[in-house]
Image 1: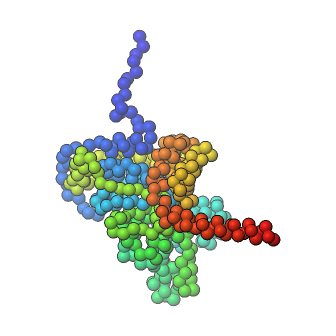
Image 2: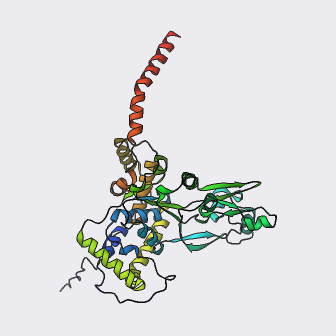
Image 3: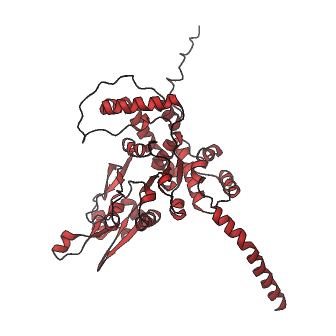
Length: 393
């Protein structure tokens, strides 16, 4: 007699993808009561990412940016009190390991810099240490850097080291952008940031490095960070130039289901009552997702996107009349990250459809469309006169 295989319930079945794991854990209800405990403010754990109720697209966008920094960062747009800042700060429990530079000069020199650009790509001290067989970097967890609204230019890009200047030595002090190399940089209320700061941040993010000049000295730093911004549109809009630099754009609205809102209240109350116990409720699943993100990052270089799938994305961008080439970059890199998170080395059309809305929204410009329409008449006249002159000549 053949023994029947045991029936595995849907809840006990291992998740098939990273997104399914997030949905399953986030949908689980916490215990009705959590015992209160005294906890010091300093060692309070962050609110668990998996304890966030709803907001599926926001969670997915943030995780894709961790898997593939090439998506170009994330912008969260929505009213206050919808969990934008909480979601970003809770990423610290999911951040994978990266190589932290051991450069004694603070330039952020890495082993792969030498692989890509040779010895001239690192500072002389690191070139010497590399030649002597010393490590240039050590594994460390990715960290989250937050930019305060009262930050000044020298705080962000770096400035002259006052302590060194007192000893008649000129040296550039590293700014926040250099410190955030290979890390996460978060700007809350990015729409309220002074233009001079946001321009410096976006240029450094796009180039992956920047140069600071102060009098007779100059220093170049790497700035390969994942940029995450959040804003409340009631308080002002972003300039189109700035908006275009963010890869994924998420519209974060409040929870509409009363059941979800009640569950969100219960989780927040449980966290305030006993932060450590609440964090422990999601500890095992959080560690599992962190490992999944690390595996996806390791798998990402091998993930391909063939011409047929890319053609679908290009057709969609053409139908939406999007001019910016950053649309393709974000769409394809997001699709690659989505496929990597699912354990696949080939992207599919379903990967494109899963990320298309967040990659392409807020990219069309009615002003530009009207501007080019208005120019068509003039363009036609110019072409006509050129052809007449060519015929006469």
